[in-house]
Length: 242
Image (tube, rainbow, N blue to C red; front, side, top):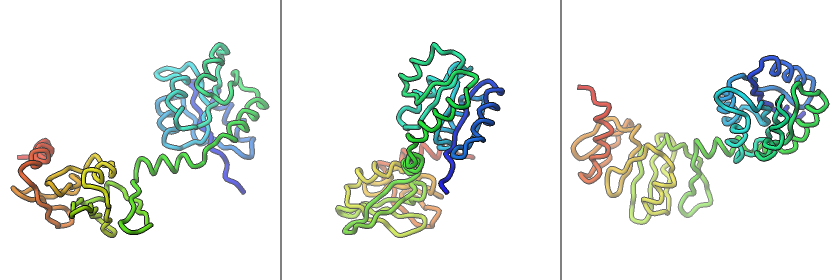
């Protein structure tokens, strides 16, 4: 049996949320994953993949349904607008809404809108989003093997001749064939800081800073040159307790 498609609901009227929830419960292929009167919270939840389809009102305090729809355009999440203001129907289609329902929603029209939206659900979007936000994929030198790496798991990176070596807190050392600065950029970690011509460290993994080296939580020592020491010193001084 296929899993049910998750639907998120955003509306500042509790009565409409209750009605939509009741109607969707009657449909075998759909379920309500969240229902909220807080559009900001609803946008956060849908952006994090808590639902595959969104039904939203237009006129709401703080954040309107049209703006929510605009912010979600790149995600491909199907959006159904449910509003008491028919004048917004054309604007809804401009933000690529799948359908427009008039409050209170007619059960048959809601069903048709959800079936239409269900055909547009991109089941791979949430997975791709998680990978984009939390992982980098790196290829091993002289191998077709690929590694999924969390940037937060990196201890430090070292340049050796033409290769870049990525040392992880757990797992094998990964050898990259890119130049040092290219590899550093591709790791996409805001915590990787260059401390030497040939070294960059994850600032979160630094335990002790000495005049010419830093000691990592793993016990490993990484050289620190005078040229790059200032940046790491500034970061540590902000947290310095005397």
